[in-house]
Length: 193
Image (cartoon, rainbow, N blue to C red; front, side):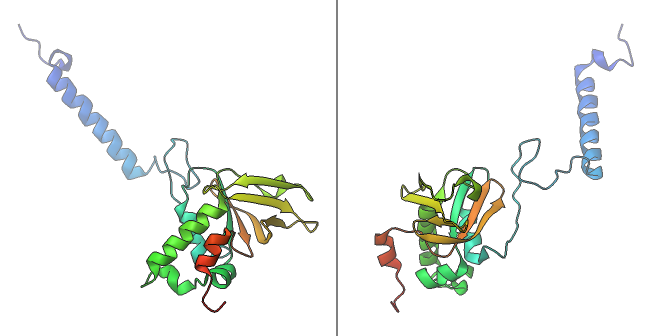
């Protein structure tokens, strides 16, 4: 004789009840936003949260270069200032928003990134005054980093304007010049030189 009222005897009914209860719980949590993830560089679950923080200190072209780096890995970027992009590479702010020369601008920014990014965090306090350390950039170009008596970082003879700007796991130092090898420098030299 069949017993009535027992869901455990009929596996299909039992499964339907379990799935319905689970869906109801998920719906309640999503409505109440109990599982809302706080903003930050990451979270306890390990999900990648992209934060769109614009920083006046690095400028539009600087933002483009920073966005080329993976946000979940540690890097140090010796980023040219907006003035340095204009002076040394002839890149103006109009090229940062697209246009007919965007492909050339993107290629130049990619090369600048290769010369000026190191796959590790280097803070200004890590460099001792009067001592020089060297690191290879992601393109293999050697960066000679030192600190002058005034406490300013110098990379391959280029002085820093601002140091230790943190962007998640990326440390940004804004430089008063563009770090590049002589071959690339000759290829991007502004025409008025």
